Length: 172
Image (cartoon, rainbow, N blue to C red; front, side, top):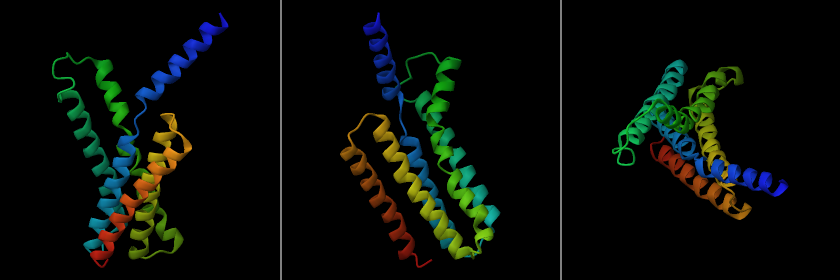
């Protein structure tokens, strides 16, 4: 009986790990960083506009990902039911969640005494940190070794630094 319960618990853990996919979080953080760089390159902008732009961009890309999963090649031959739709919506939600911390950074930046330039840099740093965090969490939750977790985080840090390099190239 104990072995059965242990085996069932291990099976549930393995199933949860197989379903765990934080790709959307990594992608959403990268998307947020790109939105911040693009908005910052345009010059002065209201903070509220950037907060709304970050959140709405996350929602639009979430919708696009849900649509792609539901009507893409993987499910083209299956009848869609409510459970499948809700599961895909939930699985892709990290895209939106990843936009929230940079948006909050923008929202609180006046309390920190930051001008618009400082606001952009803070939000960009938060987005890159989120990207690294999502990738490390995904690797760890999938059961990767600590070395693989560190490698995943390092790769995502380099990708985030590329976005920062693009920002510097835009001279804003």
